[in-house]
Amino acid sequence: MLARVADNELDNGPRATGTERFCVVTRAVKPVDEMIRFVMAPDGSVVPDLKHQLPGRGVWVTATRTALAEAVRKKAFARGFKTDVKTAGDLVDVTDRLLAKSALDALAIAGKAGCVVTGYSKVEAAIAKGDVAALLHGRGGSIDGRRKIEAALHRGNAEIADGIVVIDEFTTDELDLALGRSNVVHAALLAGPAGRPFLTRLQRLRRFRAGDTGKPEHGETRHKGARRLDSE
Image (cartoon, rainbow, N blue to C red; front, side, top):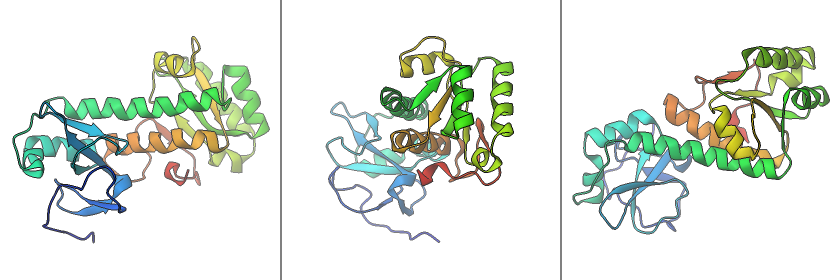
């Protein structure tokens, strides 16, 4: 069972050390990677600090939509900051969008590093070589193309297929923008360190939306034996 504390809910600023923080909603101490930090802007509004770099003391919330919605409903930020604050009614959705953007930013970096290939033929070739860490299918794209790619995946080495994550959270427009290309419907993230930040941030987004700590969520297809994203 996680430890519970009743001391100051505010941290000591972005440079504070430690691997655990106190959740202002659950009243429990949890690992930092399961939390989101929030700070108070100069105008008194509450803003998420995903990178833990914004100045000022912050409060922490378990990194799920459910916990954040509860924080807003119970006015937990006013209690945590010990003053009146402006908590936007769409704070949960804003945080969701920021988490998605963070993942797409990491995908863009992986793309610039040459670790993403796009298009059916290139994705199929990467699968044949066993170089794929994840498959991406743009939401709203071709279902037939997706079926063909996943059929190609299953025709290959079963052990390799088990380790590949299938991603369909993002629209084709979002993939276009992240990868700087047009009409990205299918893509593959190649294995290697350059793609790991994207997988880690994707897992964080999925956890936020699903409210758990590791089970496959909506939009995630993982074959038996597939590695967890946060192992990246």
